[in-house]
Figure 1 (spheres, rainbow, N blue to C red):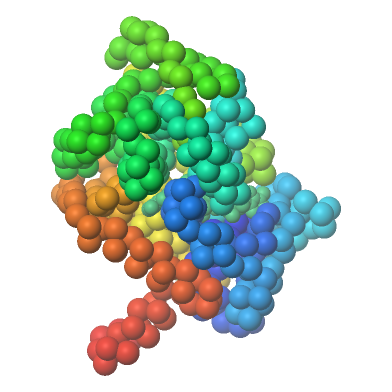
Figure 2: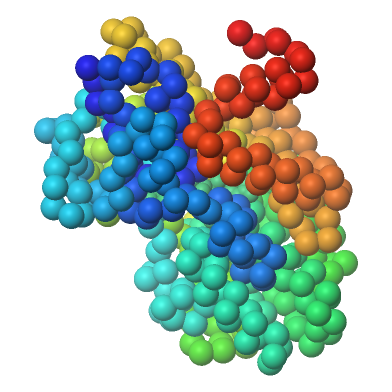
Length: 423
Ligand SMILES: Cc1cc2nc3c(=O)[nH]c(=O)nc-3n(C[C@H](O)[C@H](O)[C@H](O)COP(=O)(O)OP(=O)(O)OC[C@H]3O[C@@H](n4cnc5c(N)ncnc54)[C@H](O)[C@@H]3O)c2cc1C
């Protein structure tokens, strides 16, 4: 009997747990350790921050769903991974042994790298539901006393989609409230150009986002390094391609949200230089396994992937939902193979597919492969993207709340339609 433990129960970890439970015989044990008792749908956080979604609409308690599915659940979080002993120390002091470990812990948010930055300083965050709820409290106060907004991402960030989305969502919310004329918006980003997104651009993402920003009176500063944030004031250096400062901006703001740089969470970063990169992300091979301990797999934002290209300021490559899904699929197949004594043979595709809500419209991207030049670099704008994003939110939450793994849901839908194409 093998014991498979998944650490983290979000976009990467929860589908991995369901799929592993469905893929492995019942004599094998599957457990999940999370440091939060709930699942929440991270891509909906920008909507929470302007009051378009409430916590209860995008989250649910993990324990009953996991128990019902025959998966053991520990909600105290992992303090330490003792890779050499195949053992975890949980935050409550107890130990948990594993035969296979799936690390799906997401990022640690590096607000501490810039003075005054983040929810404990002077800017908001939408990275977690707790942050998004606090951001909504500040948003309501802001609407009573509107003024300049600074939005975007800081040097070292890799998750640019939500920054663009949030700029456009706030733009839309302000127009609806008839307050947009009182709010100058500046988009600040370390990207070398608007629409780079850590991907070297996708199709004409530069043209599309610049045009959207121009049409919606959003100014921007690219190659921007945030030096310091104070109450209502941000010091930003604009750099040239050698990262030398060419201009300094003092940006006043009444409201600000910038996506931080990410690093590995403590229990992953603590694995040591051989297993993690300098930012504390887990190194994995082509089969999602640690090259040092091949019974440890990594899925989602917690894994190390190099930037797409050199830029003046550090700009990371994003790890988006579709890529994470392909990492999950490969991990599940390879653990099943290992449990059955076979060699792993499943590799993730790591293609980037993304749906972005732009407030009054939406934009969809497909980048295949993620690193240019690409076979597919496709980008389209339209209301259908917003509808597709909302439909996906409902579909994903439906499936996660019921403990359904992907193939089963697809089979159910196809069966409902009377099409029995899948075995
Ligand atoms: C605001 C926002 C919007 C996004 N929107 C999109 C989008 O529209 N489309 C898209 O493709 N991608 C989007 N992304 C990118 C990506 O898909 C998400 O970040 C995704 O949630 C990452 O999944 P993950 O499971 O790797 O990490 P996370 O979602 O961060 O989950 C990690 C989980 O591990 C838990 N954890 C951490 N440490 C421990 C520990 N020590 N012990 C136990 N548990 C632990 C955390 O609490 C968390 O629940 C978005 C990202 C953000 C931040």
